[in-house]
Length: 319
Image 1: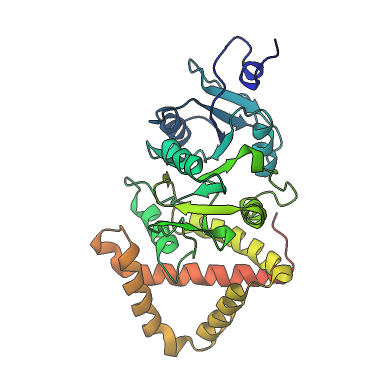
Image 2: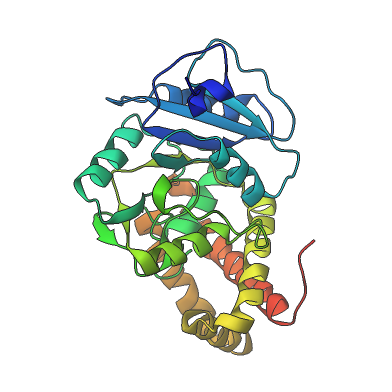
């Protein structure tokens, strides 16, 4: 009798084929990663699922039949996830990062929606910072979550509602479900930053991709300023590189607005500070005493975005 994919992964076990394969790249076990793994294994789901931890080196995973380890030495995140998918047994692929925690009904909510809407190929949702985040991470979360002047990403803004995506970047790989039958693989030539957007853009050409506010994970933010701004710099250099061919009008408008702000800084400084403070306060979970820091954080955030895109447009490649 042929072995099921689950049995191949762990020959001594004989478990039913899972409905969902959760895929989590892990750099090392400890702290955040262990909390992320526990949040998946403790899901309140009325169906079977497996968790595939993909890592560069073997990791010790004891005593849990739903837990698998796939070793992929290539650190390209697209390659790692593709490798994990190649041994996945579920009809639905769920992607989460090792610094995120899934809501207890994460799997159940996403799969109920997919079951009820067979024309939906993928679904994702919000990824706010965890409630116990320190101040330096809540500043970063404020910068990402503020409407109109933040990230512009629905998932980072923790938007309410259920709606079809019109922009592939509105959900992120930290919280994404894709039907296995629709999955065509992450583009390994893109690698880090943008491989999820490319996949979603391709899926949107073939069917519906949906944002659902009930499909929720809590994602650790990089601490502000250093780690956060370094991450944003890498993202925006990639944006600038892509802008050379795709010509996104929103990126062009941002560059023009930024240039205007730099040239006329003395005239726009006070209106800018008031605007960022008013909008930022509506999105922030910072304690009141930290609110005066919001305009300064936004200035650093926007300048990093602007300069990163310009560098990318000039053809500078990230290392």
